[in-house]
Length: 305
Image 1 (cartoon, one colour):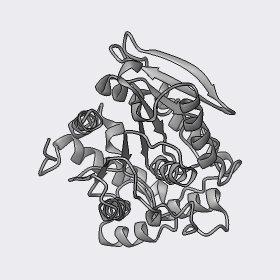
Image 2 (cartoon, one colour):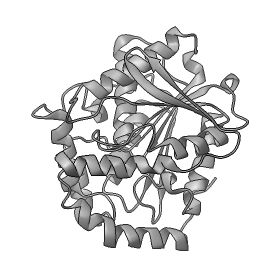
Image 3 (cartoon, helix red, strand yellow):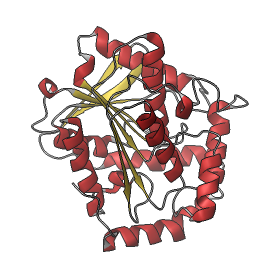
Image 4 (cartoon, one colour):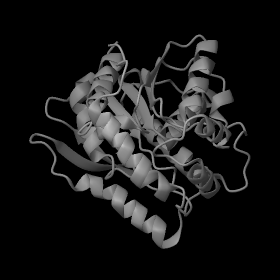
């Protein structure tokens, strides 16, 4: 499937909404105290929508990590599973905020989707979230799910956790998943790539100042380029085929491009899609923009290839 050459009318409206309503607020976000609690509550409210008929959800625990399985009608573990790591700057987002997206992903891929509720900053700083994702993957293997039946995906900060997980698997000599999918991944935790891109084209949604605040909440004073958090410079040899989807309005565009370049440098099959006029993690807005639906359909085609 080819990426559209221009943005849809719906996408242009969504970009305008974020540019005029969300970005000004994002420039002032503090990510602490009452404001953080409100942000988490608003994000989780996305999971209050009624799920389509035939959808099944259930909670599960892998080690000390709880999460939610989402299985759309027609999906089966016989087709494999998707381990999706939610975004939210390491400080918000949950299995509830991403439940609706997981239903669509499950329906399209015909696989159950697991959403782990990894520990969030600032209450649980690095490496808590990364450790939780590795624990879930280990437990899935121990419970009999073959690695080649697992797709690992992540959006935004979840994209970093997905990349960190793959690097951890390589360091520990564990088997890789069949495919990896990165949706608008935030990979350079220093925030320098985002700051530079925002000067070229102002992101209508994500504020680089907010990225820096999330980085401090997650990493504290740790070096964002150290071996484990510095995923862009990690050894990519042996990584699975990877799909990267990003909107060209995003300040994280260069993060996606750097990841693609490093994967190709390691001779890993990689597809980088830059979608015109799309905002941060636009597949999560598939109920609003047709490009979101197209992108998820492509994800399903990619992981079945």
